[in-house]
Image 1 (cartoon, rainbow, N blue to C red):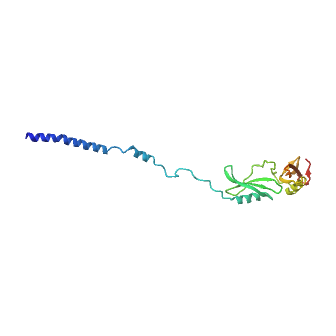
Image 2: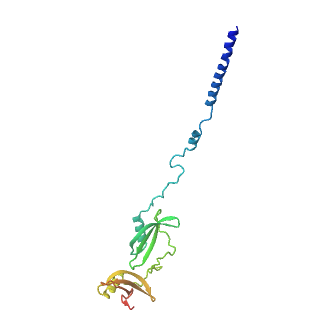
Image 3: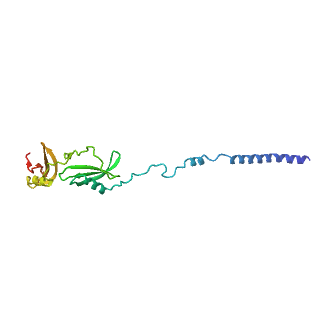
Length: 199
């Protein structure tokens, strides 16, 4: 009887140690997931393109050719010089530069959406060839005639440019000529009589 009692007593610490080992394993299995898991979930981004304004401005419904035809039709005897797309007071317009038969410059804006001519708020060309409010009825000499007259006064001369101007109360064709040696000459031709105006 004494021997059996001693052997059972030795088994008790072993069983207790096994129970403690199992308890420790169970405690480790219940720990919170690594912080990297929550971090990865937090770093998930929105789908590509979401919330970004990548829209582009719509193309004009009125073509360049249509705008040019409309602009030229507003200027009697007008010829096209140039045209480009611009922004004017928050809207897109075709800005068309037109020259009439007398050499006056006109800038015509055509709405790129409706095709209508945009009213001009006295936006005149300030390059010395501003068009009058109405066509000049006193001009009887054409640009080509004035250039021929001016070139004849300069031997070997060629026309560089010409435009209609006001000089001492009269309308004249101001013709810029360059001779064979490269010298520049300015010749004024009366737009009514066709005579060269003395300098």
